[in-house]
Length: 235
Image (cartoon, rainbow, N blue to C red):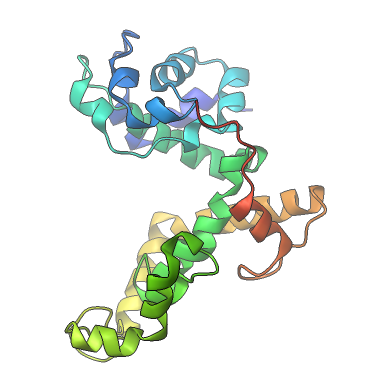
């Protein structure tokens, strides 16, 4: 196996994010995620700097790299100009490419993100789409959101929107030629290939867990990764 540190070095986010860490811990002190999760960006960067393949593989299989909210508070305070958030982006990408993300509870949720936000982007041009945020999937939105969903066309018109309409306006229909261009960007930059890797690794994991994984979000594996919380993630 090629040394994983060498692979990370080819990622511009890693190159920009890790310069000369002295392990001071300021990134962890300022990190909002570290306040709530069992998460320590200092330890992650220290582990990566060890260049130990086995240690990096365990990191790629862990929940740790999925706790970061990418707020970049770490970048603002690091005395050496590092950005652990960028290092974590590179680690996430490598975990997806190598299929290690399915070995952690939070990692497996990448399929849920791909099949909702990821596919909404390509099919509608919006990363968050009104039709996709149902009360069934997001009960925390409550009865007001249910009312919004039931009356969305009229409500958006009153607010000056153009729901699924041609021309300008909020939540307007994105032209097919624009969606084709967007898909081309995903293809050229490797986004579609990343989607394929997430799907392939998830299908393999679903078979290991003896869970059905069909298309869309109405299947056993999707419901499992969407709802399961083993209660060990927060402090």
